[in-house]
Image 1: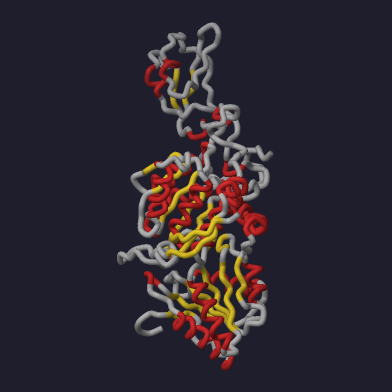
Image 2: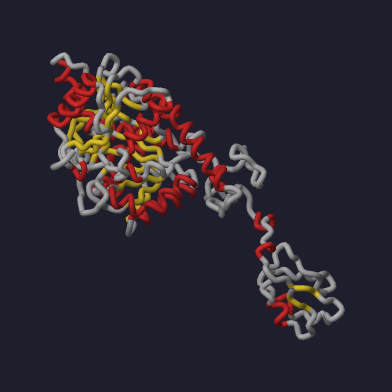
Length: 95
Length: 395
């Protein structure tokens, strides 16, 4: 069966009409490159107050088991800047 | 055993749909195809079919509903004409690019304006590059037979393209002729059950249909469609052979009528072929070697086969029932001449745009075409290749 979907696939290899025969494949599509500005995590200023990650529309601020935020997931971050706006400690800057 | 009946072209199409008994029919009434969904809805109401009939509010919705149904895994059909097809425009390309084998009965009518409800082929010709298979039907019998064969062609795994069966509005759609119907059970067996490999309602395989297809993919998907259209030619021939075994009625990509020893030939589609054959018979009695090539399969266009069939004809006239308004001839003329050029043939070919807006085309008109061809053979002078037949004023 034809089921290859990547940019090296020929027309003979691609699925018919671009159909996708599996679920949950959005994670393979890196949308972070749509970003024009980028948030930078300044870890020494961060107090781990927990305000930034719930407001991220893309779920691009990973939180570990100790409930502490880590650096941005740039594969999906669109650079909207909401996190930088809400941070009370200037621990996120946009560049 | 076949059943002898008397039906109009629209009734014949509706009866074919009844025997096919599709899962979904979504249609909106438009002259001259209105009777098809009208008859069909009575079949739904009296329980002759178990089809879900969707009485939509426009043709755009009719095609959209067919697309949704077909993608879900159902067999979907519709019928329309002229401006109805125009309103479907956006969706007919979606149907073919998503590779959904929807079957449409297109009762050919002039696309307005100025407002006209009568027959020409401007609706079908507009859709000739939309990725739909197009079969043309000379009479009620062919409209019926083509519909019975339609799903077998469209749903074939090497094809998977939507298909429209064309017939001439009013000329065949509203005239009652003798017809030979196939027994319900034989149709059921011939058409078979629709078993798509991938479909949205399959809970075991969650799929996405019609995703975003940008610069890196669309080209390859169009190439796939082009290949499917090429494959359709063999599939049509195979299904036609099987149909002949069932009914004794022979179909090919086109019909060659007294072409073998012909000096001159007319190439045309749909009901005009009947008039052309009748006229050729009269001329044959006078010793004039006239023939007719009637296109049945217009998309895919059987270029090589048409060129081969016309190889030894001394002068050819291609009749277009739609004006491409391009200063260089009608669509069928361009297809025929390009087929001949590519196959290294230089026989004289002229074009006539005729029958626009339901203008009657009679035996007398066809005779003047053969007369012109005779003149070309005699003098070797083609003159103006872009001609008009039956228009008042300069030709």
